[in-house]
Image (cartoon, rainbow, N blue to C red; front, side, top):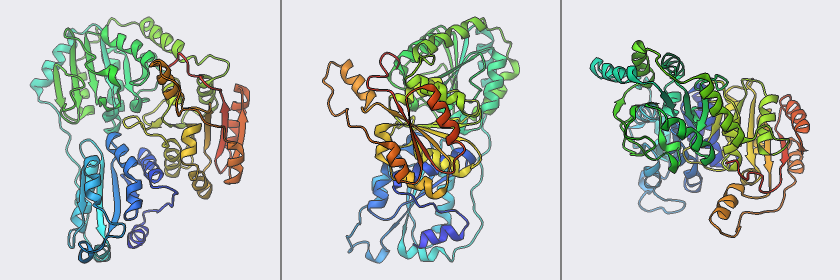
Amino acid sequence: MQLVGALNEAGIAVHLVKHENCGGFMAEGTWHADRAPAVLFATIGPGIANAVNVVANAWQDRVPMIVLTASVSSKNRHTYTHQVFDHRALFAPITKAAFLVEPGTGQVLIDKALAIATQGRPGPVLLDVPVDVQLELASETGQPRVQSQGVTVPSPAEIARAQSDLAQAKRPVVLAGLDTVNRRGANSVAAFCEGLIAPLITTYKAKGVVPEDQPHVLGGAGLSPLCDEILLKVIGNSDCVVLAGYDPIEMRVGWQQPFHSAQTVIDIGVEPNRHFMHQATTNFTSDVAATLDLLATELSGLSTWSATDHAATKAALARVARAYEDWGPAAIVDEARQASPRNTIATADSGAHRIVLSQIWQCYEPGGLLQSSGFCTMGSAIPLAVGRKIAEPDRPVVAFVGDAGLEMYLGELATIRDLSLGIPIVVFVDEQLALIELKQRGLGLDAVAVDFSATNFTAVAHALGGSGIDVHNRVELRGALRDAFDRDSFTLISAHIGSRAYEGRI
């Protein structure tokens, strides 16, 4: 209660949610809008235990999150047991740091937590605040001591060596990742690709770092074996690969050691390579944008890639995705993109629909598609949309979720109602865990624990204070979406596609 009161007094809005996991994703959604660190508050014991999933997600999806919780007072720590466990021990493996705020340390630990969470590669930090220390914090004063880090760049000699490699490249490729987005390197990536005359592939979280309707932007990679086969062929045909803030935590097994010995690989990252998902011939641990800008000063543009090459790659990806179909998961995404304003932010839950969505939904700015890509957790799409809409109410936001994912956290629909947020929620209704069922069949296994009965989501929507509609074709979906954007609460749009709708496309 003391912490909630202090947050309110400090001018930090406190939003009540139904589950701590969703609260964390909502906090992340606000960060994507304004880059202010996400703040998740959860109560002692079962409350903070409920937040483990979303904090692990922040760890793997590189989200700067301050996780606040309470603990018993110092004098009771060794004798009182009700709801007590070691919060810091639980969160130590999934945070950048976990602190017990002891008497007299509040100011410095708050500053330290903010610095650790935001600097380098972002991530979550836990502040465990005993109830007696909460009272003491009210009397602390002082200016924050969080200083921004200076931009780090390679030496002139290192830049010159990399420029020499680039000058010899005839078929260069740029692979951009999340660190580029987090370090606001979009303009630098765009200029670098233009100067090098190189195609751009991104991770899913980096979609939109250059608008995806540009001819040389080939879209996102990392999860669909069928699409990755096409994009890995592009990389295999390259003689020079530039990794721009590429964090392979988003990528699946097909992206382990994807480069061959004849290639020059220039890796520009914010942290040293300790993952060993790949190796590079040149490694820069430096500011991504500043390093790209330095490299671009001597680009000669000798690339032999042609517009025909890029068009052929995009056409091959389109054949896999099947956006042209009359009805199905790809048609839903294609129709939704056409019915949504260009500046719409989309969120995707985990599941088969996310793979299709990530290939078809075009992004025209960084952060145009939000998802749990490193951790791939279910139940994230709706709270991410809520947080993003809270931060920028006038921006159109649409959430895409499977029927199983929606049923995990139905209570948050009431949160949207209470906040009066106009969010269309497109539900892929197939009454099964489609991705798992597909994998089971691929392994020759029986379908076990993947099928379930249908829920009347339209009735649920009305019961929780929103709107609901069932759609079965493109025309119905288009009309439902356009109406939903004009409402001041959620609209559940149940798009019925039937079972096994993702066959042969992911």
